[in-house]
Length: 249
Image 1 (cartoon, rainbow, N blue to C red):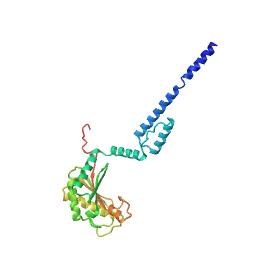
Image 2: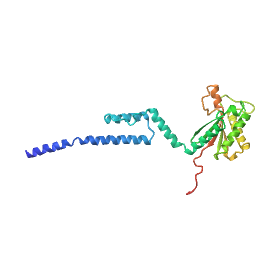
Image 3: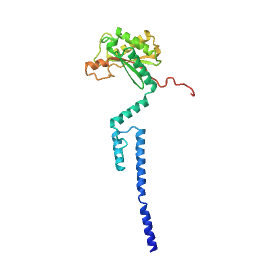
Image 4: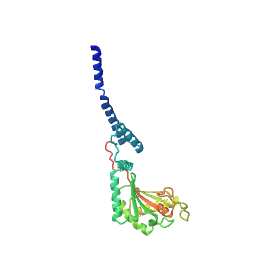
């Protein structure tokens, strides 16, 4: 009888500690939640799948608060996009961009040129109507005034400069140019020569490219859009390797 009684007591003791598995399970769920958050912070994930995972974990935790509660998909996308841009764009490039914007505003040139940037450099966009006549690569007087000011801007930096010519998709053929390829290249070269010969930009800093009609900024589906595509970009090239020393090589 004592043996049976002792066995019953052991069973009771075991049963008394049976609630401990809940604590272990709760710890496991917490670790899984932490793991998902860690994956989310270290990688690019599908927001929909992340929400599904979050809701699944929330259900497993009996209604615990969602890790993305209070945030919309748009909020998370904006945060990811901002973090991505900050990782890619060098702060020095952003500072250069701000200097270019300030220059254009200070010289009242915002109606003549627009500016944008990416990791490769700063793009000063000038519409064809300011620089050239229709089908021509001869710089107009209004274009010379604009390039005079931009030449002063370029002198503030030591970066290489690429002149890019673009056209719309209307076929080109006249005595000077047999296609939009030639027209876009001729215009880029005209701007390059003016900056070199009239504004004393060091020639080794300059190069020119003609893209013809094949890199439109907007669809060529209206006269307004075609006018936007007829443009010249002055690209202040940003090279992250510039200024990096050779110590230790």
